[in-house]
Image: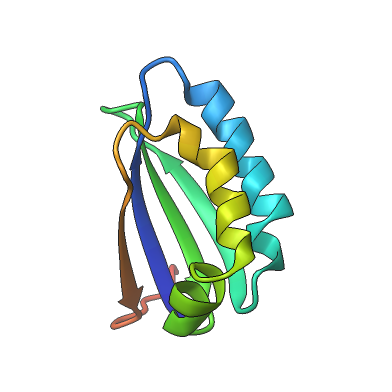
Length: 102
């Protein structure tokens, strides 16, 4: 499984509208993508205009080829893109160590 980490910065004062838009985008667009397994959105405590979007994909190609090069990406960006203060920084990770909580 691949973890996509997107560091998103939005304009100040747009948090409520952005959170509604990203929730809608995840439910109506990304949820339809092949290989998508789930997502979390984290809001910055010290920087409330900063968000981390964490998406789980079966494979790197499910995100980089299937989603990013397909029609769903255009739909996604139409919903969330207007809120971006700068382009998101996106990286991919694979699990190296897993320690369950006790």
